Each structure stands twice: as structure tokens, then as C-alpha cells.
Length: 157
Image: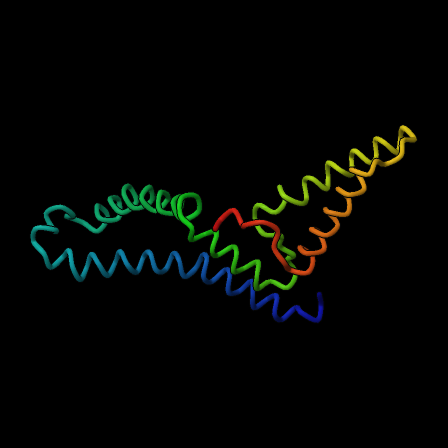
């Protein structure tokens, strides 16, 4: 960690700047510019927003709920966030990703098989031919996944 201290500090600086400082500064800047360059010059809008404080109050009352809804749609109702997460996982060398839907086809059957084998071994029972063929099939599927291949069709396609 000590050898990466400079890069870590740079990353924390960028996060603080872009997430907090620039965000707040951009919001304030947008409100000031739009009010003093657009609303103050338009008599109709000046009637709706007589003061800068009234304009900010409307921004807060309408803008915050609207932006919350937009953020919700971004994360929960559109493909935008899942695409961003896919790109982040693909580009991160520390993340090993099994594509969505594959856990049902390979990993969960593997977990179930492991439990079944443990139960049989605890009862001093031998594995059947079906058990051995299932084990071999799951071994092949896991090897394909480990090598970066696909099993079945991805659920998001």
C-alpha cells in the first residue's frame, strides 16, 4: 500500500472533486447563471421567480425529487447501469466474473451435488454412476467457465 500512496491520494482527490466539490459548484453555477442571465432579463419569468431565493426554492422542490426519479430509473429501470457495471467488471483485473445466469446452470447444481456427496459420504455410501456422470459434466462446465467460455445462453441476451 505504501508504494501506491500517491496514486491512492490522486484517486481520493478525484473522487472528492468530482463527486462532491464539482457537483455542488456546478449546481450553484447553473442556478446563478440561469437566473441572472435568463430569468432576470425575461419579464414573464421574473414574474414567476421574483427573487433568486424563490428560484432556488423551486429548484430544490422540483429538481431534487425529479433527479431522484432519474437516478432510480438509471439504476433500476434501464440498461445503462448494468452496462456500466459490465464494463467496470470487464476492465478490472481483480474481478473474476461469471456471466449472469450461469450460476443457475453450473454453480448451483455444483453446490447441490457437493451437498449430496457429503451426505452420502457421511452415511458411508458409495457414489452411483449417475453421481459420477453428473460430477464429470459439472467439471467440464466449470472448466469452460474458468477458461472464459460460456454455458448456455446469457440471460441478458
